[in-house]
Each structure stands twice: as structure tokens, then as C-alpha cells.
Length: 76
Image 1 (tube, rainbow, N blue to C red):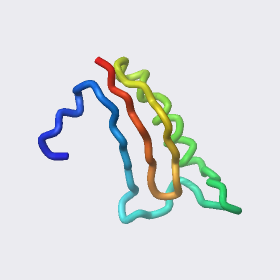
Image 2 (cartoon, rainbow, N blue to C red):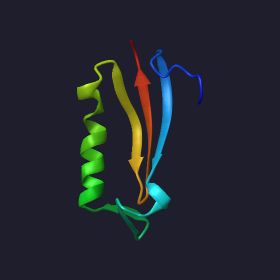
Image 3 (cartoon, rainbow, N blue to C red):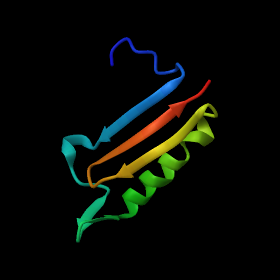
């Protein structure tokens, strides 16, 4: 949101989409997400967020074929 201070204490729901919503991270097979190598990289990077930002804790998150949803808790 324009003007919002994302560095303040709180909980943020994040959605990150691929360009043109191209399915880069894997596919849904029999109702279940099957990650490809790029999807595995997304998971590794997402899990590493707290390694780079000590005041951040990851809550629930999910990688979908063309986007990632996640809840990030910021506790300064």
C-alpha cells in the first residue's frame, strides 16, 4: 500500500506473482502442487527470509504454479 510503513511491527499478507502469471514454479497434479526446480528454489529463498531479516518470522505460506502467498510477522 502506498505510504504504509512495512518496517513497523505487525503481520503482513504477501502475494508475489510471476510476470504475466506464467506458471514457472510447477503444476497442480491430482489436486496437489508439484514443485519443479524453480519452485524448489522459491521455497528455499522463502525459508531463508528470516536469515536475512532477524526481526521477521514466517507464518503460513504456499507456493502455487504462478504465485506465492505468505504471512510474514515483523516483530522489532
